[in-house]
Length: 587
Ligand SMILES: Nc1ncnc2c1ncn2[C@@H]1O[C@H](COP(=O)(O)OP(=O)(O)O)[C@@H](O)[C@H]1O
Ligand SMILES: [Mg+2]
Image (cartoon, rainbow, N blue to C red; front, top):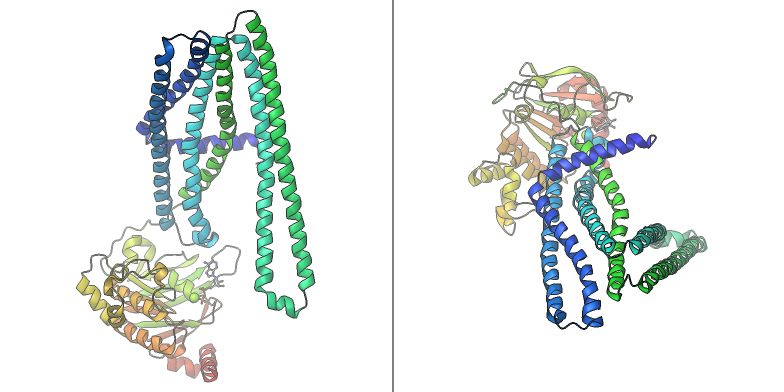
């Protein structure tokens, strides 16, 4: 924006990269181009027929052309129809294929970029990149090419036909036509801009109305009817003003264009009349010239607008390419591990989400021995989730290291490391697919029997059997057919199927009522044995049997020990513990 030359330069680079995607489909593009040439030629051919149509059919009344001319016209349009189809199909095939490629690449990138990238941008923005930006790119890569080629060819062909007929009149047309196209384009843009303003105004008005109606009781009780009426009236008056402005722009624009067109016609008629007087022009020539001019105008108009399609496409591609150019999650480790023992050690681990903020974890040391349960407690925001996100390397520690079986986890291949970990969190992620497919997410090659075993162990068999289509029931978007506890138990079944040596539970039961929590706890008790379990628990009662409890406060590990030891210490843990009992007394 600061330096137009640089912007221009990088826009061209982006467009070239985009054309790289397009060129993969060059056979379709080539066929489309052939279609375009035929289209332009037949359009020119048709205007060329105007002359014999007038001069021979009507002026000379030549019987020889009575049949030949109509048949030629028919033939011409059949050829043109086929050419149009070929062009449109070829271009659509190219454009849609580019969209397909980009969508796949962008989604692949989304799933491979590091978790911290998702903190900077809301999910809807990412989804819009996938849907909307790729759509814009399709337009730029097919529509823009098509317009540029077809219309340029049409313009050239038309001008050739005209020049062949009368150089003088053609020159007159060539001077006047672009002026008209330019002015009407300009007027059209102003009209659209105001119109957009109106759309926004309508949006505001609707929003104001919605607000005031949904808060009608507040409006009434605070006696604010009059103020709200005034507010709405002001918006409505503004809307009226805008509408009038649009209407007057539109009306004056169309009259202006008509007057312009009329003066152009008058000027051309003047010149053509003079030519006719001198016997250099027939009625047929004049009709031919007029028809060509009419055929030129829409092409000129589209060509002048193609720039904006390209600009939108380039802006969208820029966003897409900057996504595609993001680095993948770091995955330099080479050690592949079949099944870890599950000995986890944190050595002086600190985490900064952003360099300028205070750390979310500070110098944390602990060890979780294979097959033991480590509970992590602390106030909300104390860093519990941060701690467990480090193990699957969703985030990188800013200092210190994490060892698994004595090896720095950065040295493992990422997928190999993640295979060692099963995760059940408060937000269970289910897809709109069958129960079977959702549980198989734990291990894709599991047999149906194994899935049933896992469901049984997860206390989920009973409710799955009651679903309308049993294990094949589709769960709906985000699994919204199920209750929170049922979703948790499916997540546990999934984890059982995965059978990983390390199990992470992040407030798995926090959002549940007592009965569902009991079922989920029971399911967990089948999952936990023989695994190294890290459990973030909301209710301290579920922590009592842990082998060790880590107490976090503002990112620091302030206490650790067993439940009994910590309670005896009378520190933060015992404080949290007592607070909770008071809460549940009240409840
Ligand atoms: N993705 C993130 N980006 C930036 N800051 C974060 C992110 N996740 C958590 N934090 C911050 O880190 C601190 C610890 O958060 P978290 O680990 O989620 O705590 P807990 O799970 O104990 O409630 C909080 O101050 C929180 O605001
Ligand atoms: Mg948390």
